Image (cartoon, rainbow, N blue to C red; front, side):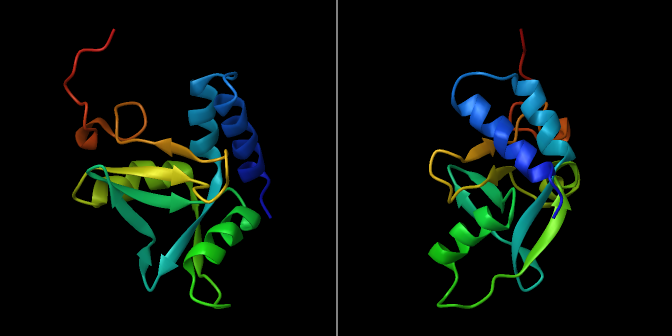
Length: 134
């Protein structure tokens, strides 16, 4: 299995503990191969707070934690392996609504959300596009 997800999980842990550079975290997310559960041909997502969040996981263990909570019985959960950059640069803009990336949502103290803002998603679909930044 690709180790990029493990590196991303480490960068998430750093940020959650108050250390590490947010730009390093964002770069690692973009370079990482993430496991995205699928339902039929659709990527697993949910709406919360006016945003459609695409669920993604750093490794099969994190995905399995999610599957235990969401998949019926012992049924296997299908998934796609996608580069983080592809998710935020191509898939999020195709949603037709504000969208972001939710990583490792079933990992206690390990989840990280990448919201639909400039610098994470393309400016054309960012909810804060056109706002002044300092």
